[in-house]
Length: 147
Image: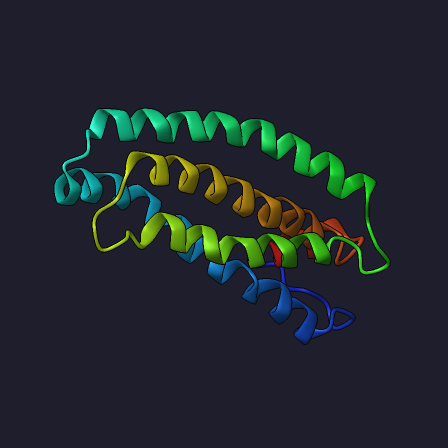
Protein backbone atom coordinates (compact mmCIF):
# COMPACT_ATOMS: atom_id res chain seq x y z
CA UNK A 1 0.00 0.00 0.00
CA UNK A 2 1.50 3.34 -0.98
CA UNK A 3 1.50 6.31 1.32
CA UNK A 4 -0.35 9.34 0.06
CA UNK A 5 -0.58 12.83 1.50
CA UNK A 6 -3.65 13.30 3.65
CA UNK A 7 -6.42 15.67 2.77
CA UNK A 8 -4.96 18.36 5.04
CA UNK A 9 -2.12 18.87 2.53
CA UNK A 10 -3.18 21.23 -0.19
CA UNK A 11 -2.70 19.76 -3.65
CA UNK A 12 -1.45 23.05 -5.09
CA UNK A 13 1.36 23.19 -2.49
CA UNK A 14 2.53 19.74 -3.47
CA UNK A 15 2.22 20.63 -7.17
CA UNK A 16 4.28 23.81 -6.74
CA UNK A 17 6.86 21.88 -4.76
CA UNK A 18 7.05 19.16 -7.41
CA UNK A 19 7.22 21.47 -10.42
CA UNK A 20 10.32 23.29 -9.12
CA UNK A 21 12.42 20.14 -9.56
CA UNK A 22 11.91 20.01 -13.34
CA UNK A 23 14.41 22.69 -14.38
CA UNK A 24 17.00 21.42 -11.91
CA UNK A 25 16.68 17.85 -13.14
CA UNK A 26 16.59 18.83 -16.79
CA UNK A 27 19.78 20.84 -16.31
CA UNK A 28 21.61 18.10 -14.44
CA UNK A 29 21.18 15.36 -17.04
CA UNK A 30 23.10 16.94 -19.97
CA UNK A 31 26.11 17.44 -17.72
CA UNK A 32 26.95 13.77 -18.31
CA UNK A 33 26.99 14.28 -22.07
CA UNK A 34 28.64 17.66 -22.49
CA UNK A 35 32.27 16.59 -21.91
CA UNK A 36 32.37 13.96 -24.68
CA UNK A 37 30.64 16.40 -27.03
CA UNK A 38 33.16 19.17 -26.30
CA UNK A 39 36.03 16.72 -26.69
CA UNK A 40 34.75 15.65 -30.10
CA UNK A 41 33.40 18.95 -31.47
CA UNK A 42 36.05 21.35 -30.19
CA UNK A 43 39.10 19.13 -29.89
CA UNK A 44 39.32 19.48 -26.12
CA UNK A 45 41.01 16.80 -24.03
CA UNK A 46 38.44 14.45 -22.51
CA UNK A 47 40.85 13.72 -19.66
CA UNK A 48 41.19 17.39 -18.78
CA UNK A 49 37.45 17.97 -19.08
CA UNK A 50 36.80 15.03 -16.78
CA UNK A 51 39.40 16.27 -14.31
CA UNK A 52 37.76 19.69 -14.17
CA UNK A 53 34.37 18.07 -13.69
CA UNK A 54 35.84 16.11 -10.77
CA UNK A 55 37.29 19.29 -9.28
CA UNK A 56 33.88 20.91 -9.75
CA UNK A 57 32.22 18.04 -7.87
CA UNK A 58 34.73 18.38 -5.02
CA UNK A 59 33.93 22.11 -4.96
CA UNK A 60 30.26 21.11 -4.86
CA UNK A 61 30.82 19.14 -1.63
CA UNK A 62 31.91 22.32 0.15
CA UNK A 63 29.18 24.39 -1.50
CA UNK A 64 26.59 21.86 -0.29
CA UNK A 65 27.71 22.35 3.29
CA UNK A 66 27.79 26.14 2.96
CA UNK A 67 24.38 26.40 1.32
CA UNK A 68 22.84 24.06 3.90
CA UNK A 69 24.31 26.14 6.72
CA UNK A 70 23.22 29.50 5.32
CA UNK A 71 19.75 28.30 4.31
CA UNK A 72 19.26 27.05 7.89
CA UNK A 73 20.61 30.21 9.46
CA UNK A 74 19.00 32.83 7.21
CA UNK A 75 15.38 31.97 6.56
CA UNK A 76 12.74 34.54 5.76
CA UNK A 77 9.08 34.43 6.64
CA UNK A 78 8.73 32.51 3.35
CA UNK A 79 11.08 29.84 4.67
CA UNK A 80 13.63 28.54 2.17
CA UNK A 81 11.70 29.52 -0.94
CA UNK A 82 13.88 32.59 -1.69
CA UNK A 83 16.95 30.34 -1.70
CA UNK A 84 15.31 28.03 -4.22
CA UNK A 85 14.19 30.93 -6.43
CA UNK A 86 17.60 32.62 -6.41
CA UNK A 87 19.30 29.29 -7.14
CA UNK A 88 17.01 28.70 -10.11
CA UNK A 89 17.45 32.24 -11.42
CA UNK A 90 21.24 31.85 -11.43
CA UNK A 91 20.96 28.30 -12.75
CA UNK A 92 19.57 29.48 -16.09
CA UNK A 93 22.58 31.63 -17.14
CA UNK A 94 25.00 29.04 -15.77
CA UNK A 95 23.40 26.43 -18.02
CA UNK A 96 23.70 28.82 -20.94
CA UNK A 97 27.37 29.43 -20.14
CA UNK A 98 28.11 25.72 -19.97
CA UNK A 99 25.83 24.17 -22.58
CA UNK A 100 25.72 26.82 -25.34
CA UNK A 101 29.23 27.33 -26.67
CA UNK A 102 30.06 30.44 -28.68
CA UNK A 103 30.25 30.22 -32.45
CA UNK A 104 34.05 30.20 -32.46
CA UNK A 105 34.16 27.18 -30.13
CA UNK A 106 34.27 26.35 -26.47
CA UNK A 107 37.36 27.36 -24.53
CA UNK A 108 38.71 25.61 -21.48
CA UNK A 109 38.30 28.78 -19.39
CA UNK A 110 34.62 29.06 -20.30
CA UNK A 111 34.12 25.38 -19.48
CA UNK A 112 35.79 25.75 -16.06
CA UNK A 113 33.78 28.86 -15.18
CA UNK A 114 30.64 27.16 -16.46
CA UNK A 115 31.21 24.03 -14.33
CA UNK A 116 31.75 26.04 -11.15
CA UNK A 117 28.78 28.35 -11.80
CA UNK A 118 26.63 25.34 -12.67
CA UNK A 119 27.38 23.49 -9.42
CA UNK A 120 27.10 26.64 -7.29
CA UNK A 121 23.72 27.67 -8.70
CA UNK A 122 22.33 24.12 -8.80
CA UNK A 123 23.25 23.52 -5.17
CA UNK A 124 21.93 26.93 -4.12
CA UNK A 125 18.50 25.91 -5.31
CA UNK A 126 18.50 22.16 -4.80
CA UNK A 127 19.63 21.79 -1.16
CA UNK A 128 17.03 24.27 0.19
CA UNK A 129 14.47 22.66 -2.13
CA UNK A 130 14.98 19.22 -0.60
CA UNK A 131 14.80 20.58 2.94
CA UNK A 132 11.67 22.59 2.09
CA UNK A 133 9.99 19.31 1.11
CA UNK A 134 10.50 17.98 4.61
CA UNK A 135 8.99 21.15 6.07
CA UNK A 136 5.67 20.88 4.24
CA UNK A 137 4.26 18.61 6.95
CA UNK A 138 5.18 17.30 10.39
CA UNK A 139 4.13 13.72 9.72
CA UNK A 140 6.96 11.33 8.70
CA UNK A 141 4.53 9.30 6.56
CA UNK A 142 3.37 12.41 4.71
CA UNK A 143 6.98 13.55 4.19
CA UNK A 144 7.79 10.19 2.64
CA UNK A 145 4.75 10.45 0.37
CA UNK A 146 5.68 13.95 -0.78
CA UNK A 147 9.31 13.18 -1.47
